[in-house]
Image (tube, rainbow, N blue to C red; front, top):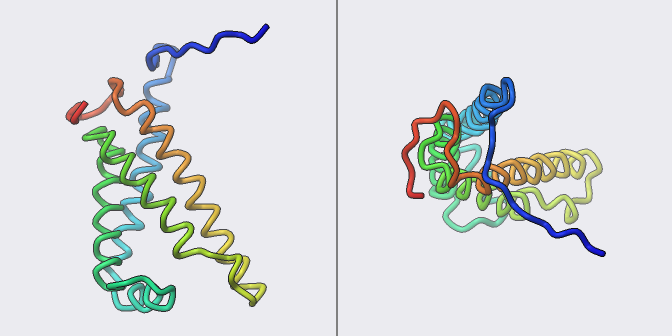
Length: 149
């Protein structure tokens, strides 16, 4: 007999659960926001890399992705528009993993390892963003509390 799977609303009523959830959001969101700021600090180098990877409109892509990372990261950290923030980050991280860190097409072993590491970082970041997206419609502790849902 197969057990029935049920879902429960997000419950953070155990000791320190709300504080740990906030800490996780701060670490995740602030790190991504900082990565987004780096896009603006070295646009030319990042645009050159994006062009090397074959992205159309590389300069625009760097600025747009930097904006998405900053706004999405701050949204997750603050708990503002969590569905939009987490969803945008998840899509960006999945797309950039495949388009920017295609380690399978690299011949140089050191470059291949570097690209694989970046690919895997994007994948686990996307996993975290998807987990936050899943609970984005629930009330988050210590959150600004504004959103679409």
